Length: 466
Image 1: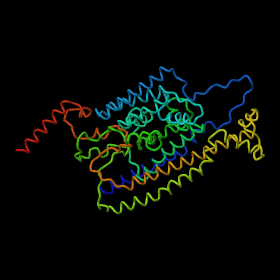
Image 2: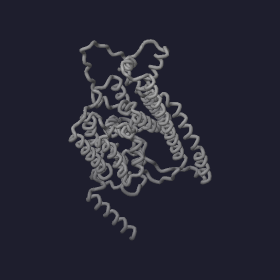
Image 3: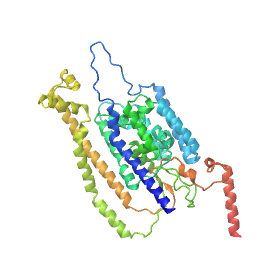
């Protein structure tokens, strides 16, 4: 029997390793695969031909429809709050998820979504004259405001990206803690890079490499469809891989949710340690009671934290150094920098022939000197931003190490306030307040349940007094 159990455990580890390896491959090779369909040279046509416009993104909507999106978002977040925190109904949450996929996904075609609005806000702060529409600002802020008061109910059933992944969870497995902490750095890097690229006007990479944007629009190239299918395939065993290990908006939601006034609770009253919720969360966002075999001395913990704090400047400095080293590569994401480098090579006969972009430049009135000066300004801007991004990542690494070094004593099962998606799985599994014949979703609100519990309490008190 032990051999069978050990064999099953080994198989689970192998499946987990293969799934994580597949997701790492998606992070590295996904963008390249997505662009592969556009690498072939486009045909040249004579005069008189008008190139048809490609379906890249939805056109502008009427003002009324933009406000309709805001109303639907607020209504969906309110419903998610009620069914997650108050009613605890997994059925209602699933219905809301289907509605989010249909409306914000296929009908709205994923644009503009709160996740992609990060770039619009960054571009608006760049001082380039771009005015962020009020509707986009509200789409960006409203989920964060809800998270600040009631937790990440946006992730529970309103986000179409999360809802699409939620529907394909079949046999979730737990990711190794070391791998999980390592992959959890990716959203911070993605967020910082996306903000930097949008700030300098290089690209909207968060939307460009959204794994579901082409799926919702049904008009993406083969590479994007392949990327989307691979993410969903990995999501059958690693629950919500994009939400946990890539989504940049999840960082902002996490910071807001940590400060939330009200938050989802595993149990409506005191935890009775029934352990029914122990394996209910497929995302590993449920904090379990701590078990210490040998209590650590206070001096040992203080010494470990002191050493880590002393190493903070080194960690942040290393992040700044890596950011500065990466700045030349990141600067090439801007079209002007790439064009300037190409013109420089052509001018000094380092390459043969010209490109479509360089030929277009020669036909303009822009001088070589002005192009180089503009590219130098962009490079300096990217260098400064890369240094700040490196410092930010270094600070994140330090905070994560500090959080891991501080051992907290926990006696109850409780959701992680920052990471919890408020999906109510743990609350649904809780046995506290259960009454035979009463649906789980009504266990906290039904007057019948409250009356039944008060009668039990009275009977228990009279037995103790007797």
